[in-house]
Image (cartoon, rainbow, N blue to C red):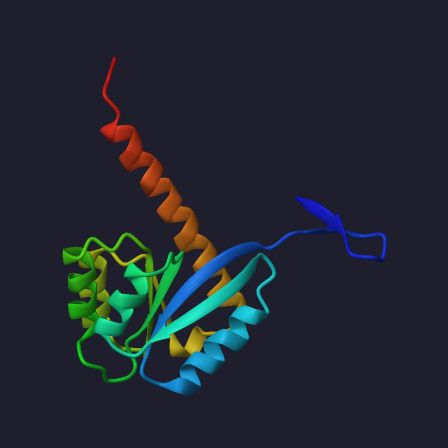
Length: 155
């Protein structure tokens, strides 16, 4: 839906997106929130979880479009354990991992566990984050459509 911006120009309305940020570093939350506040396509609402228990509580009590998992800081469990726990608890929300360069083992494990994408510290900025969010959300929708069509009984 388009609307007039008051200057005679049409503007597209931003899509509402709720993002759960998993990190134990308040500075990283602030940086991610600042990047997301500059998104062109999305109006982002964020919540933060500093550990897996808090993340599961938030996921059970709210709808989220995406999870951003920060693998750069120590927490109560590893990124692999977080993703495994999400699978066991049937968390059906796309996960994007933010990682330091050279974390190939984390990335390999994450791919096997089905995370949607990753961003390294070196490439993290508003544009890259917005494109990654968009790509993850689009891929999630496509997978859901594919899964739904496979579950439909054949006539």
